[in-house]
Length: 252
Image (cartoon, rainbow, N blue to C red; front, side, top):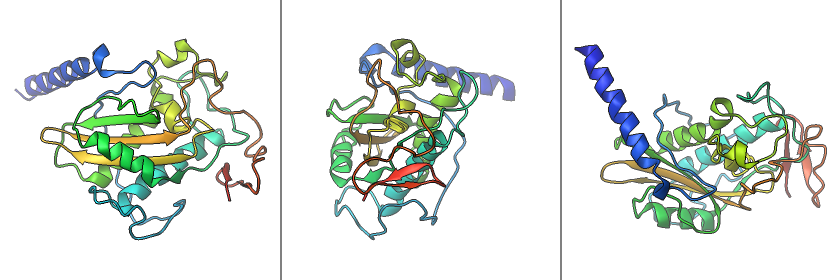
């Protein structure tokens, strides 16, 4: 009986995922998908946060600085792994080291734009003109801080489950493996020109949505995801400095 029940649950999840992955739920260069992963909770570790203000955005939208900090911290942690050549790539080995991977900072205008869309409780790209990642969970009791951790983790996991390759270039073939969220975390998520991030979490009636918007947007076909080189050896913007231990370029 237990095996039969598990089979029914797995079949339901697969059918729901197939439904959500129909073409009308996607834009050409940003694909949202449903995944179920084990939750890891992070709290009270402020390392890597760009701001410690108690209410930095002054927006009454259900977001807190704790949630913002989790999104920001996890993005920069993943960018750091990639930049230092420590992230596993399904296509073989680990990522090439990055010469100028920027540390991301939090942007309240991007959050405002993201939350305006999430409040509609629609699971697809907002077509805002910003880079964007979206995520959905059917667990409506999910803590918003957990949602921030889980969504970012799943976006980044595309590197390990699908892979990019040593060429580090976003070709149509690479994108069609289903790595559009990773390339935003590293490009959106890790796209080296993406420096600003604003995120949100919305509890809807039947599901929870999480999303982040990025400036500058990534996922440009035929472009390098980031410039390969010795770790943060090319931090050449005015007054930028290399944080060698994290492999990230800190802007003034």
